[in-house]
Image (cartoon, rainbow, N blue to C red):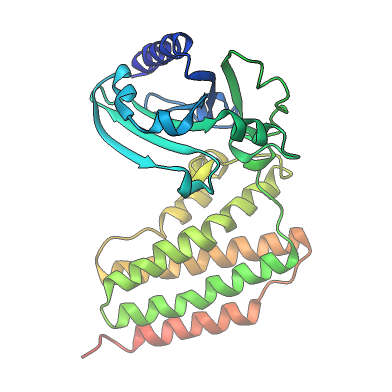
Length: 291
């Protein structure tokens, strides 16, 4: 797959070099981000700067110059506040290319912005520049991908919400309402609170100079095997009892990480809230199943 990706990149560059519509080409994302993992499934993220964007978008036939597509997502400028468009393409050889498409004027506008936009700040490489329009691009700082230290208010809000949402899970499990329970466990608790909690734990351990990549891709790399095992326990299947077990696993690791972080950060931990919600979870669990 990696060889296919390299071959495809060469095809894209040969085509771009000979196409007058294309004025510049950039490579972005994981392949040029030193903090991102790269493997055979890593996508090509290509940015084209074109002389006439509307004309270019009027016919997507150019996409098949690099292989036969089997699936595609089309997003035009309206989806990105008029800044650029996207064509995300999955090819029959199982390579995937995300094309970001800029007009020359919009690209220069982004280059001249006071701060480097996030997609460039996490890494970029200029592959082609026919007119020198990339010469003023600022170098990436990679700050956008680094774990940020929470303020005391952010810490308090996260743990308040983390414990609050457990009450919804408990009610759903008692009602045998699996879909809602999973929504609260996985959408709310895991992605909105638990992910940030784990990031803060790792950030503290590495002086806030580390990235775990998007959606926790590198969590396992930076966590002890003991902590990782406790985090694994928060995942569950479809059995209601298994979801109860996972809910209490959330509570246990939440208390462990939260109290340790609070001490290191010098922030108060909501001990009373923690215990009160634990008591409620036990109460609902002992009520037995809904008739």
